Length: 117
Length: 110
Image 1: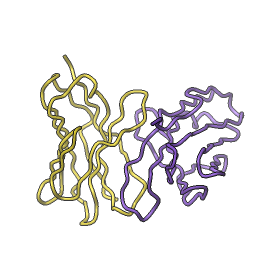
Image 2: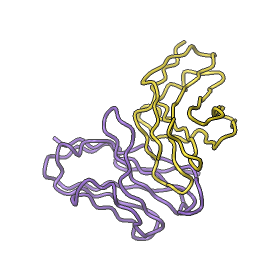
Image 3: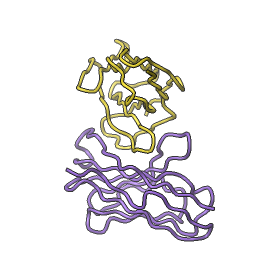
Image 4: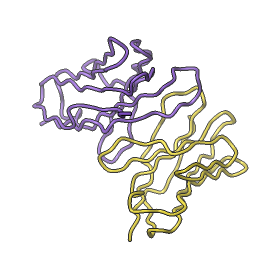
């Protein structure tokens, strides 16, 4: 019964570098979410996957942000040409049900703290 | 989704009940009230949700006023491990994107 795991837990990148953040959801969970959490703020939605399909990417702040979930399990959030304003905690969450099935609690990972210097 | 208002911080003595308020005066009929909490350096954790009836589970109780414009999360016997930021979220059943806001930072002291 492992929960959602994320790696790395901490990442320091120099401005302009590309980074890749990994999320391992709970096995069998259909839905996967990415959130960005700035210091002192609540998490803000970035993107949503149902299995391998990215159904909503309305929260991605720019075209430097890209997410994928090619086999419907593990997901990667990639940030190209990182900027200082990208510094935040990136949270991944998964849930058992897909859209249209009512509310199902989301299980969050511990997050990856990204610091861009 | 309706906007929520929560006090930025509260404190509570260990073993006492912690009552966390949330105002959601613009809530509509099909919107649920959800509570999550986030312990330092962890991701948010679901606590409880309700539509109009009071709800109770092993973690907490949720009291929703009759007009549904406000609610209270009750931790009946707070422990030091309940120190966290508590988020009150209002959203419709078909909406999968919660708006967290800044929440209430609850400090439970010995």
